[in-house]
Length: 124
Image 1 (tube, rainbow, N blue to C red):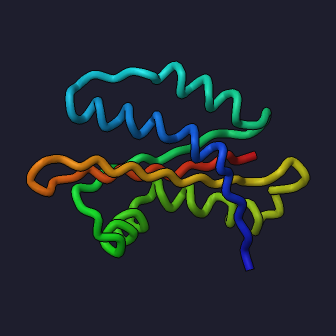
Image 2 (spheres, rainbow, N blue to C red; image 1 turned 135 degrees about the vertical axis):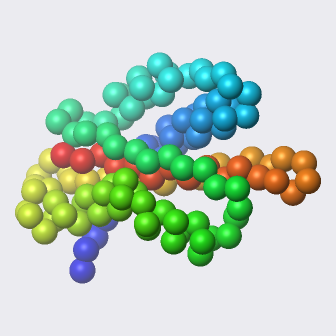
Image 3 (tube, one colour; image 1 turned 30 degrees about the horizontal axis):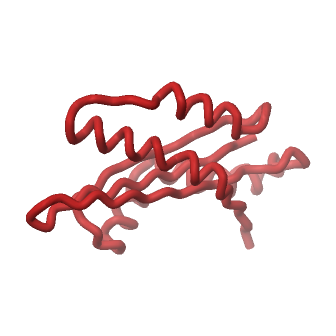
C-alpha cells in the first residue's frame, strides 16, 4: 500500500493563511502574506516545492465537503502527488512528499459559517 507523511509543523504555519483569506473575504483587507511566505521558505526543505489549495465552504457537512474536494483537480493533484512520485520511484532519500491539512471554522450570526480548508504538500 501507499504511505504518506503528514507534517505537523507545515500544518501549523497554514493557520495564518486561512485567517488572512477569511479576513480578505469578510472585510476586503489582507495582511500577513509576507510573514506566511517567509514561514514557508523557512519550513520547506531546499530542493522541495510548496503547493497548497485553500477553499471555503458555507456548510460543515463532511461528506459533501470531501466530495467537493475530490472533484477539484487542484486538490487531487496535491493529495495524489506523493502517490505518483512513489509509483515513479522519485521520492528517494531526500525525504519525499509531506502533506498538511488545516481547517478553520468561523461562525457568524444566524447559524452562518465559513469553513476554510487548506491542503498542502512539500514535493521534492
